[in-house]
Image 1 (cartoon, helix red, strand yellow):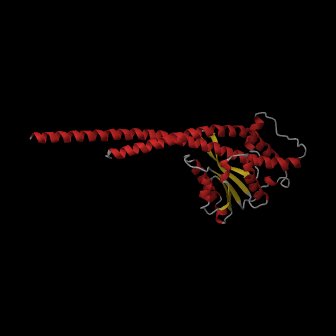
Image 2 (image 1 turned 180 degrees about the vertical axis):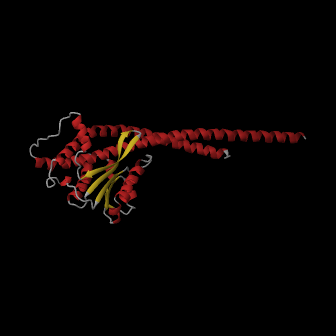
Image 3 (image 1 turned 90 degrees about the vertical axis):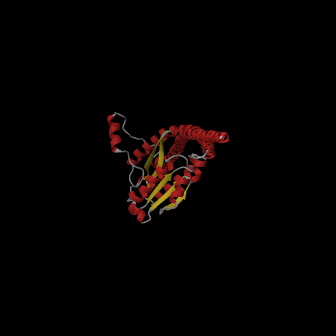
Length: 298
């Protein structure tokens, strides 16, 4: 059994850790509210814009849309979005694991020829992929310091330019999608080329008697293609960043809540151990005093 000093030191240490995790939980909860509001407001606009973009791409010829061209995949770009900080459970590990699996197994042949490229957003992804055999094009860890649409535009434009110039034939996102504070879903989502609407979803829409998609292009189809598609792609990128940001705060709040609870349970066990050790020490002292008194009598 450890002595009283050791147990007392552990109690002080764990109590200090518990105070830190409790404070971090409160901070994450406050940040989560703001991040959650941002993604909830952004998601309907982004989804509708993506829906319009998909229907628009379906009506275009291959020569009209730069971002809708389906090519043989000889080069692939993975955009991996994590956080800059840890202490958020398996938030970063799940995304990195999914992206790494896609690179090493999903694109095994391209990986062997060095045709898998990576753009990272978040220090955790940068630290991981900088040590792997992939072509790191760039890292953008600064985005999460001050999230804004303007900060996302250069990264989105860089990915779009690579696809437009034919340097990559496919672009995919890897990120955590926000569901609830306790639930984040890892997503592998195609960014480029723009996919047409899912036939299954289209059938469901027709059965539900919704109006069929028939757009009138004003002022012209060419101007719509030139302006709407880049805007929609940048908006989609921004939504991914907002999703990841809200997911990070939710994951950290949950992790710190569990850590605080675990510290409380450990404190209970240590205090029980401390009381037992103190009782044993007092009992030994009483026995020694009794033994000394008996010896003096003799």
